[in-house]
Length: 145
Image 1: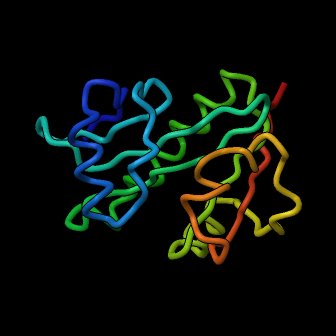
Image 2 (image 1 turned 30 degrees about the horizontal axis):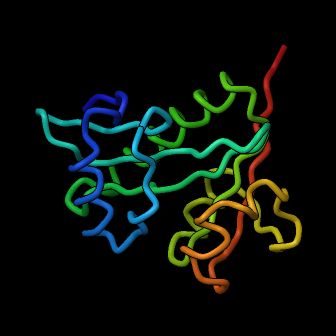
């Protein structure tokens, strides 16, 4: 399994998101901020970020069911965190209806919707794609000197 840019796999990413019942209608045209987990030429997982100043919205984290519980999602998130740091992002925020405990195990903490940075509140994910019942989590990204 290898982690690489998801840029060339947009059609496959949309299929994977649909299969997982995750939002795909607002998927960016360019997946430059998305990473893909590939196994033998097959897309088996994806994760991405939308950047809003020094904040990032983690989105579209999914792994095909038959590849789950193998640490792939963790590798995708680690790759996104590295990308975010390289882009000067110091906090990741996400919305989830089903995976709060998983993200909490990865260092994310629940926050109130009113604690979300204003720039992220303008995103399609926050403003209308994800329901208001979605749990909001955030994680500061800390660099060591």
